[in-house]
Length: 144
Image (cartoon, rainbow, N blue to C red; front, side):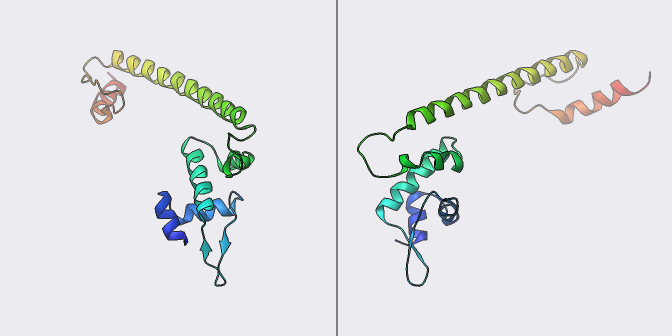
């Protein structure tokens, strides 16, 4: 099948398929006129690449796990578990860092709220009403 049909079937763009090929994750057969032709095996490989990307792997990381992309063998690829465990540790580190940053921001919000007792209560900490804070900041910064 041609690129458009393959991309539609995989739920990705043709550009993504070309990118997989450009970075060395796939090698696709071409017609005499240069059109890419995707086999069922190519679609399975592209689907695995798409799934790895969706779980946070970079194309460079996937390339290192290229044995996990083939149809060969009945079981998991050699080394796949170790590489996935390494990725999970990386995700956990990122998550811990984000949690620490979130806590720091929440502490700063509480400090600001204490400095501006008339600031309207905002229970949605994900979208503070900064426009409402501007007049209070201006009044706070003006000389008495």
